[in-house]
Length: 183
Ligand SMILES: CC(C)(COP(=O)(O)OP(=O)(O)OC[C@H]1O[C@@H](n2cnc3c(N)ncnc32)[C@H](O)[C@@H]1OP(=O)(O)O)[C@@H](O)C(=O)NCCC(=O)NCCS
Image (cartoon, rainbow, N blue to C red; front, side, top):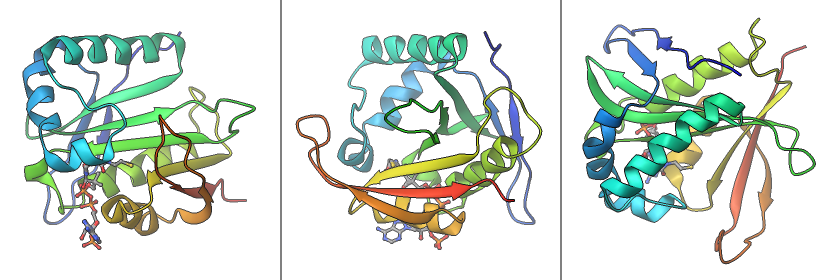
């Protein structure tokens, strides 16, 4: 069992540091607001509709830490919730790669927040940590999600393959981007 931990994304010359911290029940109202955005509803598999769903989702993030299936963080900038970041454990035989996922709140987009989180998580995963051993990391997004595709490319995740649609859960094709541990 892994206790939830905090990660810090370094500041840049133009942007403050980001704090990745465990989710709390006090995030529930902000989660509902964030998921009301059109892009969230378009690109997320299970957008949150109300506070009951948000509460269940927060509980699931705690379970993810407890069973180490997914390490999930609220991303804060200056004490304000600006996004979500997750590292998902490999699930063989489906995939041997550790997975990344993210969203940012509508008002915080286009400022490099998702990319900086991906860079920090990549360094952490390929660094000396032993929480989630990883030789390769994958980043999946629906074909047509150009913002997410751009984040992947900016962070050095090459397009590895196009995954077929699998309705009803995955009605669209997806890009699988991959980064391997440097030799
Ligand atoms: C995808 C998402 C996470 C990106 O977050 P972000 O914090 O804005 O990401 P960044 O600022 O690090 O980078 C976004 C890049 O995509 C580009 N971009 C955004 N929308 C784009 C579009 N429609 N077409 C092409 N590029 C686009 C931005 O210009 C930026 O690239 P640049 O730095 O070269 O200018 C955010 O848009 C989001 O939360 N979308 C809704 C949920 C979602 O799609 N989650 C991902 C599921 S896989």
